[in-house]
Amino acid sequence: MNPVLPMGPKQTGREDADHWLGLGAELISFGRGFISNPDLVERLRTGLPVAPVDEATYYQGGDAGYLTYPAYQHTA
Picture 1 (cartoon, one colour):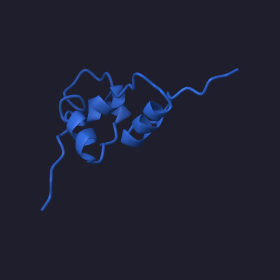
Picture 2 (cartoon, one colour):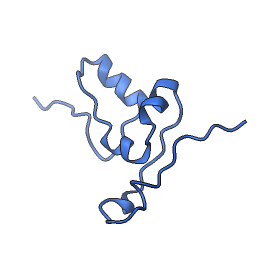
Picture 3 (tube, rainbow, N blue to C red):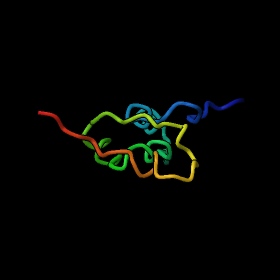
Picture 4 (tube, rainbow, N blue to C red):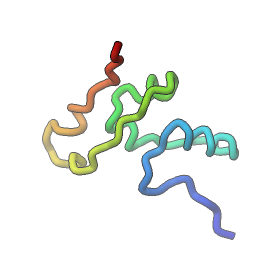
């Protein structure tokens, strides 16, 4: 029997987490989501969109990416 694993190239979002929690998962990883969303917990809690990650900024040694992703900006 091959289990279906909830990991892969797709970034985990709120709907994915709810799906796997509903199937009995005890832990959901948001590693990539935290990279591009410094306010990820708030975004998930309030239903705000999750920003996509720019993989070109991974492990580049500079400030681009890890330090430059903004928190969600509400518009009027």
